[in-house]
View 1 (cartoon, helix red, strand yellow):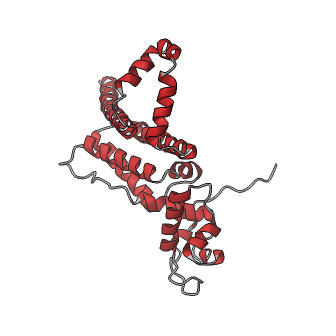
View 2: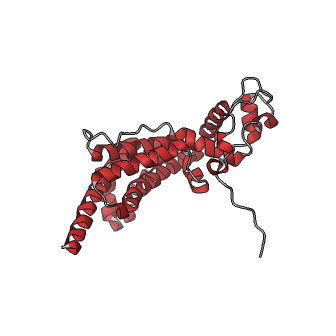
View 3: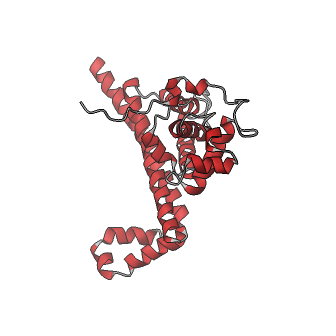
Amino acid sequence: MSKGKAPHTSVWLSGKAGAPKHRSSAGGEGLDRDRIVAASIRLLDAEGLAKFSMRKLASELGVTAMSVYWYVDNKDDLLEYVMDEVSAEMRLPDPADESEDWRDQLRLLAREYRAMLLAHPWMPQLVGQYQNIGPRAMKFADTALGVMRRCGVPPESMSGAISALFQFVFGYSTAWGLYRERCKAAGLGEEEYYQDVLDAVTNRSDLMETYKESAAMLRARDTDTVEQMFTKDFEFALETVVAGIEVMRDRVLALQEQQNA
């Protein structure tokens, strides 16, 4: 049996997350874990995950790399702290508030998740690499489940309903983030890049004639900015998912009622 690298154990399951955030004997004036996490987020937002390193982080903080390791054991642990920190940016509804429509609460959660992912385009990659089970992330997940329970989705269907909503948001936001990266790599603004692609397609009469449905859709949207298009598409898709959850809830409950009759 080959000996491969042992899988990373989440910092939230290792007991290390409860270690002191401040260590008076560590190097680096005024350094603590919160400051390290905040600087990490700034670096990731500015340069992306591929260019992030503990050495660059130490330089940003004005300390030695060894000083950083007084507060975090390794880069993996640090990235998990970072993931949980940005999860705190999302506003949460109160699932126990009966005066609030559960549909509006789901919309709020979806929009907040989208805003967080777009603000930090490196997050989708981290979500694929690490267990996002810090206290803030779990509070978001638990709130979403509480709202879903309020809407009446049966317990055995809640995971599917949650997946329909948040996997849609995740995929949509990731695609939007990748579009922004393509624009940046090309040295073009988002509008300029889109217009260049649009012109290249619409100037090909053979393509416009062959793919008439796609051509019609392009013409229907030619007055919107890229931001407006993405936002309109997101909102329409969100309404479709929320409506679909309600329809499927009623269908499952009706089937259960028939089976129990």
